[in-house]
Length: 289
Image 1: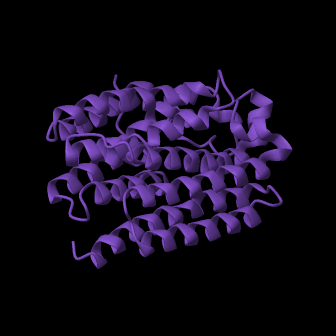
Image 2 (image 1 turned 45 degrees about the vertical axis):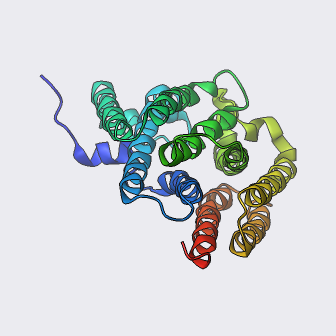
């Protein structure tokens, strides 16, 4: 007899009540779309990328929980996830994953051939990430590559080409993802060490704050270079400066390496992404676009 569908548990599975992951993916995507469109993205593409961001983040949560369902019970933060508690079956999770991926791919088919091609590689990156923590201490880099892949997709959808300057935005976002996901991994570090899960937080050890600071500096530099290459004005550079100030505040937040403080620092990166997006929007608004 098939198990009844628990809608509330399925929503918990895709982190519907925890939108921070979607926002961290959305702001760089919208920023890239605004720059690619010179401040006037088409409503169609806006809708496609906003919905696509939600769908793919949700699908990513599912494949992550499927991969970690035998490990999450040993981690304080994840021991109540639906696949661990049995509220959602493996079959139900797999079916929902396929449905979400098909819906996202349907949206991509409304763009162009280059964007469709890039989306296939993006899906491979997203599906690969959850398994990396078993083989390397650098799974955050793979997550960064996956989370940043919407940037070239946005340019491809808007311009049907990939200008070289976009890769500065891509590298900046990859570095920034490693920063905030390392802060996130610091929350679980004690549990991860017990069960043998690898992460940059485990790798960096006592040097974690120093390495995060260096990565934050490189992220700011890449954003500055991207602004220069794209000819962005004062609003962009003010946004980057404000983001650098938030990075400094995050260093203060994680100074004692307490679980709750590290988690707050991770979540606070939402404001970094929003600042960069508003900087791009303000630049084009002042240009009259």
